[in-house]
Image (cartoon, rainbow, N blue to C red; front, side, top):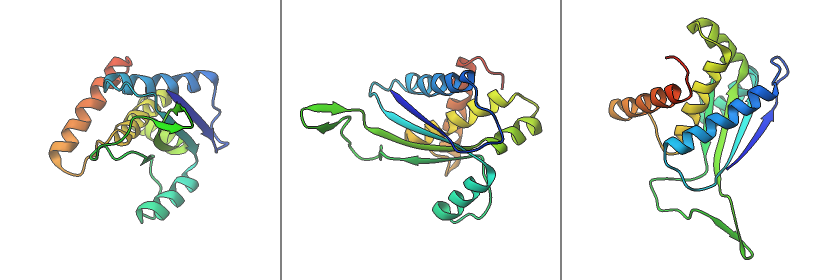
Length: 159
């Protein structure tokens, strides 16, 4: 597993502890889903202005949001686990997650829990989207919520 972190915002300091929390959360989701492929995951940390632009450009929704996911693999189709370059297999990119740290901080205050807990929740949500889960109907939404709760508990965060 490779986790690439791109901090593109300046209002919230990103400590080594936060970086380790991000990596631990990604690994926990992959382990929870019994994923045996060593994927590459890109995490971009942005401000509300940038995520609003991305939301407008990619989803035609002209407002800020907390997390966006851009899957690189369609799990509804058969796909190769590895990409071959020459004679070596490389880790395939699972996708990109973009999180507004401004929105993360706002929501943590609004919901009455820590910034770290909100960040973990958003990462879990984004990772599940990369792994093919969605919440377009009630059944899928319930399945995704259940997984989010179980992973949060596994990471020792209260609901």
